[in-house]
Image (cartoon, rainbow, N blue to C red; front, side):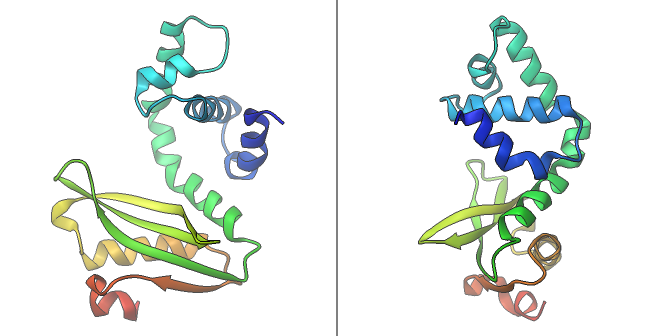
Length: 170
C-alpha cells in the first residue's frame, strides 16, 4: 500500500468535514514530509508529488500555509485526530509537559499519549514565554484535551510538580 493510501485511510475521518481540495493539499504536504522534505515551505514544495513545475508546487504550499480558513480549522483537525486515536482505548495515559522552543520568546505545552513505551504527540500549544505556567492557559489546554479524548476512557494525566495545585484540582 502506498504512503498516500495509508495517510488517506488514517486521516479520512479527521479530514472528512473539510473541502476536498484542502484534504488533498494536506495529504500531499504530508507525503512530501514522509518523502524527506524538511519543515520549510520550499522544501515541502520541492518534494510535493505530481508533475507540476517546482515553482508551481512551492506556490501551492504557500497558498496552503497562508490559508486563513485552515488556521481556524486546526483545532478541529487536532480534536478529530485525538478522538480517532483514543476512541477504542479504555485507558489513556497522557503525559503533559512544558518544553522550550528554539526561540526564547515561546514555550510549547504538549500532551502525548503514552503507548507501548513511546509517546505519541496529541496536542501542542505554542505560547509566549510570559504565559508559561499560566493557570488559565493550562486549564484551557486541559479542557481542549478533555473535549477530544474518548469520554468512555479512563484518563491518567502524568505531569511534573511544576503544574502546581490549580492544575491538579481541575
